[in-house]
Amino acid sequence: MAKENIESNQMISLIIMFVFGSSVVMGVSNKASQDSWISILIAIALAIPLLLMYARIVKLNPGQNLFDISDKLFGKVIGKIINILMTWYAVHLGGMVLCNFEEFVELSSLPSTPDIVIGGLMILVAIYIAKSSITTLGKWGAFILLVFIVNLIFTMVLALGIVDIKNILPVFDHSVSLILSGSFDVLTYPLGESVLFLALANYIKKNDSPKKIYIIALSISSFFLLLTFLRNLMVLGPEMLDSVYFPSFISVRVIEFGNFLTRIEGVVTINFVLAGISKIVICLFAGAKGLTNIFNIKNYKDMVVPTGLIMVALCTILYDSVLEMIELIDVYAIYVIPFQLIIPIMIWIASEIKNKKSVVSN
Amino acid sequence: MEISITLLIFGIVALTDFRSIISKKSKRTIALYSTLLGISFILIMLELLGVDVPSPSLIVREIILSFTKG
Image (cartoon, rainbow over all chains, first blue to last red):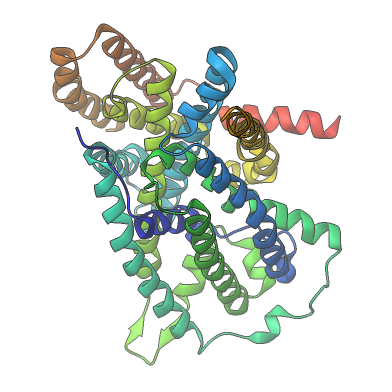
């Protein structure tokens, strides 16, 4: 059987869609209120070394994914513990995104529809894509990104008529510690979540540069992330931005173009569905691959359906309300440190040591 | 309503994907598949029947808050 690969531009598209996954509607951390754009800029700067580290791990271990790498570097016991942790993170994150989606659909358009129907339909699409092949996922990512960016630019342009630049002022009104805390939040959600792409690292072609893939994806996604935040801030103002759960949806809702183009928030919903599905598919991929590795199963596709159903089950017990969902965001940045930072650092250091040893022995 | 939809979803999975797994795959795959299917079914049904299942996210939140406050 021929080895499946993914084009670098498809991988870039997938990372961008993954970063936008739920942040396109949930927004990013707004701790520093109107100064949060500074937090986002700092987070982008901090994300560069983090993503370069992920890229270096891929470069040092060509043709292998996160689970193969940790098995190879740390042996059966520690390797399996790492794999269990990363699999849990993938499944938990997938469940959380599914939950965000359910809450959003319930609040915005289908208040009487049972959650299980919304979650079930969403996971069905994700399962279909994940079971197809990585090539299907790659093609999905590349096509969807175009639709996504066109939608985003469309809403940005229409918002120009109602933005109030004064909403961004006064600049540096908040303490440095608050701005830094906000930037740490943005770093962990959504930028650092791209650690899960290490689970797909074996699909990157050997000639492609992982560094280039990660940096281009980070540049494009950060640019649009910042632009989306600024649009929301300048349309809604800092007080309103603080009080709404789905800032992009609300800010686009107030856009009117003449008297004939109104209520275009459906465009944001489309973006959320597309980006949300992409993010859930990646989590599903990573979760299924993790389970396959932990239990020594040959084909990850056999584990896609049960992993998807576990995500739906997690989603039903994760939160009772949107308020509980928002409360978790306070501690999310701390919760993900082992998955996004500690484990990758361990893998990177071990890979460097192993690489040096093999160079010396050669 | 929710219970019937859940039963329908799991019924479809059992009749399609799980059946193809049983006919072709190894015992380990079948065991893991049925365990995960069972866990997810039980969790969803408990929640739908009104049993208060502890949320992993809230447990994580409580643990982290107890550390950070301490």
